[in-house]
Length: 458
Image 1: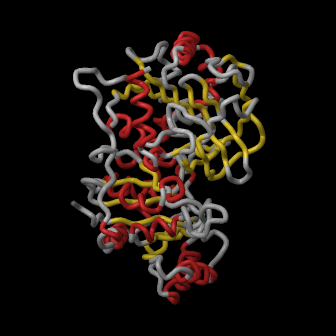
Image 2: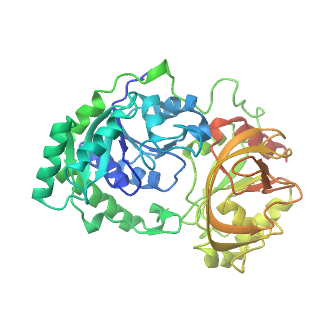
Image 3: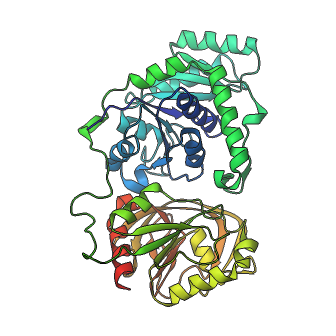
């Protein structure tokens, strides 16, 4: 069992410093050297892992200590890093920023400590010179458990600017592992929820990742960065890799019966999914079949259950609405009582309409875009029994959207939320569980087992 994967965490003092450029560029640059690179992202973000996957040719995976619990961070990391030569973990927000009111929980610093991984600090140096030493010294000394292995200076304006920055950091005793200048080609387009996902701009995304790799190769000391990663010892705690099919966790289906087909929505409109969900469904005995609601006019043959995750249906509302045959297929499946799990984008798709355009009509609710951003971690409890959870099941989730659904909850809500205010939300009807809440099923693997069992018996 391998528990000593060379690894480093790419962090920053604040958002907007250039973490994604440096992390993705490093992944691609190391992969170009022939290394098998394992890509990871701290936090609940679904979009950055798509760019990581493009850079490495491997599935981008999330490490979220709030959604999954600190105890699963190392096992999930080792699961993703199996067979890899090196791992790069992109942080979230500022190095020490975590779940609101929860101390270090879910911060990049906490994940770095749980992994025993050195931190490479990306600093936006565009408006400072000697002060950079004080900034880096503060971040490096704030928590003795966090080891800053070096700094990458971003948005450096000139050779003279670089010289001043290096002099300051030499005095502070923190090595400079890279210096990057601003390059327009590295910019990636954004919209209301962040970067535009890879699935929506694949050719351009390939160019963006290539530009990131080229900038990192030009400006960073890859040998020194690789040495920092290789200096990491065994992952603390003697953790074993997470697996979706631990003995007794996911019993196999009845002998002689075919695996139930679980259709999972994908394509440009539904890009938000944690890789472990499909792995858990398969381990529970399902045949996972991905389909694209923008292109496919019918559900996969033999569909016994449906999972519609997050994404951007508001961007593709016209095309989703125009696919009447698939909308009808989904409505009939839900009416039959088959298990349907929908979160966020999936919730919108199941509504009667989205921004005035007809959707699947499974739920007697309407959805619309708003100016208000709803964002944050949530503590949740299942209000009643559903295809995903028994009443009283507690899970942690994350909301991230600029839409509103009216009403916000059905006669039988999906979840009771305790943070930031107590409320109920979502819908449970027949076999449907629909909610705004993004959850990570690795934290409660019984969710996948329960869903697949219902697919067998519905």
